[in-house]
Image 1 (cartoon, rainbow, N blue to C red):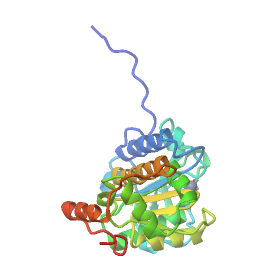
Image 2 (cartoon, rainbow, N blue to C red):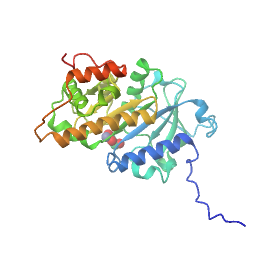
Image 3 (tube, rainbow, N blue to C red):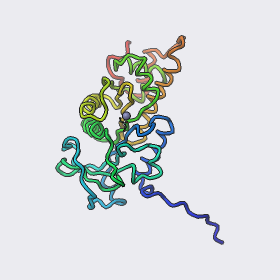
Image 4 (cartoon, rainbow, N blue to C red):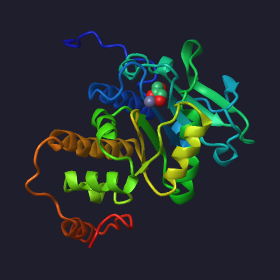
Length: 280
Ligand code: 2HA
Ligand code: ZN
């Protein structure tokens, strides 16, 4: 007896593991309220072996001129979100909201291999992403992912906390016990700047030499990692700490995690807190 019900048609691209992960992650970020409208962008470095079973890597659809030559990333494959695209919608049409590109061998072109259907183009923050990838790869060859989003409490905190990156980091560490273990290198902070520009990309990337995450005051956050899970988890942890801060900031605090306790955590978990933040 045939008991099967009508199969749901699988959306174009959703059989590809890295496309599915991008679609699910962008959807989750939207559900968290971190990516209203077209807010946020993601880029992930892929190995040729991950790409080639699903996409014809000989078949360049067309070329795009990058904002600056990216010699350092020559030959690398990236799955990236599209400019002006809504994270809410990626899951319903990955091909129209995402694109797969390869930096050409001479670093002067971006070769589109898949996606960006109907004239879509890569995220407006591609310069910031590329510059951040370049800097993270210098300090960590395993680096692969840059996520930018508009994490709500991180933005809120940037209005009421000072923007010194050491004191901002210290406050975040004090909010939840696990923070110093998840981001012992702290959070980098740049001044408010116009998004989408090479200048904000340079300022962000400079902070990426010493930090996995960078705050854009009154705008959002950049988080990086070896995987989408790791970069997402980093932002989640920072946002959680910022949420605790926002929930407690207008209350009188009766007890807190001390600097000695933060140092004990670092020792217990084998991490080295960024120097100059703990006073012990
Ligand atoms: O893509 O988040 O910073 C929209 C943005 C720009
Ligand atoms: Zn943004």
